[in-house]
Length: 204
Image (tube, rainbow, N blue to C red; front, top):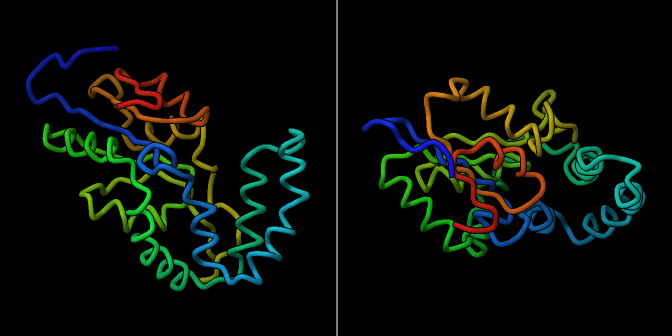
């Protein structure tokens, strides 16, 4: 466990990973399938084969393979169109929610805790869903946009692993002044879980 709440009214933050924690499955492949034509899905999947092989062989890191994927499927799309697709994607997210995660989110909110999401997925399709649940702080991967067009590159670091801790501490720097709960399901969450006072790996 960790530090206990020492005084009434102490701030408590509950940080949830999104893919595989709040949802049962990774939302990125679902969003690609949702937003792509059959032709683009086939061509894009073929185009990803070299990068996937290099990633599996550990010649390139996770974020480079992921950025390549974004370039293949999303570069050239107007940001307004992308955000429109992201808003429409909410109904699919609803279908793959982990009921235990939702119950825990509501428990934290009932107890006056601030619930946030820290995710390697793009903020664009997380936020429309999250705001329906009263979650307004989304620390996630940001997409680079030039002249309203998605380039396919990331604006900053992929929000994965140690970057999750960096994002959290940038948003909430006074670490000694709040209690931190963290929920995750993969190796990409281990640094965040290690930082927390109360950490939950694949459990609630």
